[in-house]
Length: 213
Image (cartoon, rainbow, N blue to C red; front, side, top):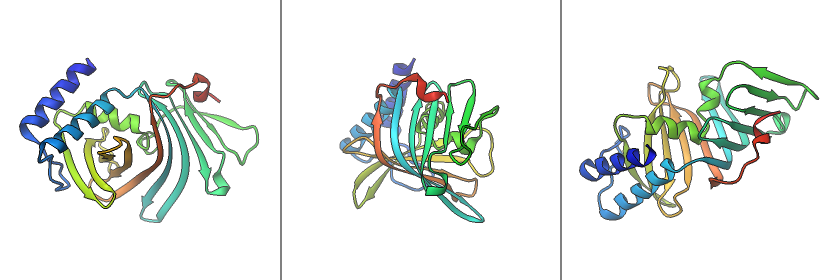
């Protein structure tokens, strides 16, 4: 099924070279289309990832910034550990795909079980973006020429009609094929969540014990 999805996506972009709503130009030449095809394969072949990332939550009251270590599987399991700032360092949220567990480093030995997932929590994970992107009926792709080099920009709709989490965009380095930044925008186009990746590893060996507390 994944291979069929990939073939359809690559055919569509080759024929239409679609553009994102952000106004970024679509792939304009063979090199940019080739980079896009490689990025697509990375997304389709994603089974899990490990990342060190800065996560910013923007609201009308200001910005909260956290340093995180993230592990996640495309099947839904994940673990997010907060490493900074100091007053929340050591806090962990993990899901085994059925239950969500949360450990607060400020309350020794206390583990809580959360019943429901929230978009604010799940949309910071690349696996959520990939699932949303591959389920989109139309491709949105652009090319950003940044100081660090060319970036392929993929766009996905966030399901659920959330007023503050409507569209997510992923910037991928055309040379390394690694994610650089993931941004979630509200319905007015304002950036609500910004994830900046410092280290990113595709499809690494993971112990299932990571996803339980």
